[in-house]
Image 1 (cartoon, rainbow, N blue to C red):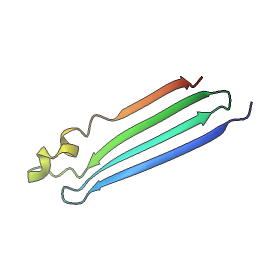
Image 2: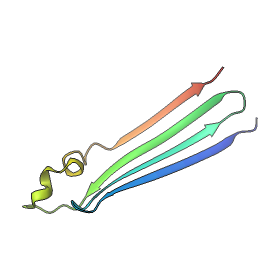
Image 3: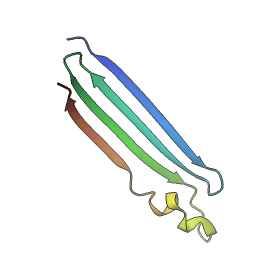
Length: 75
């Protein structure tokens, strides 16, 4: 049972609004066609009360972190 482990990550910086979105993925790929996947998305921003950036996209949804997992089979 020989498998390949693939990993990837991305970071999106919003320098104007001082925010960041981090996305990471991890996949275990089997030569028989099975793939197991796991990933996460994390949102962060500088917390500055009274600032004009409180309505920015990242600040508005920063509590909506996401974790996802899945299994797929290619035949």
